[in-house]
Amino acid sequence: MTHALNALLAGTPEAGLLPGRDLLELARYLIPMEASLVQGCLVAAGVPAVLADANLVQTDLLLAPALGGVRILVPQEHLTQAQAVLEAFQRGEFALGEDADVGEE
Image (cartoon, rainbow, N blue to C red; front, side, top):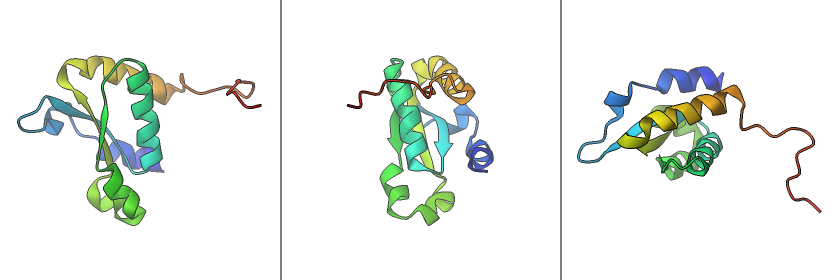
């Protein structure tokens, strides 16, 4: 259900252009942890990504829909690469298998 809401919240990249900056809105998530996870994947892939409104949404999750969720912003010159990383994330390419070694002792 949240995936459908996230898709509804997503606009066109041009609509997400912030005045006076080269940051574009890549995606929106109602759950801050999901946005943080995607941001981490973007940064690991070399895309400088920042979260907007994460702290505000975390103060009261019931306000998340009214605020539009947490926005992931990327520089305009990295938009194509960021979209490819987001699509790979949505396909599950970053998922760890059951036998993944995560460093537990």
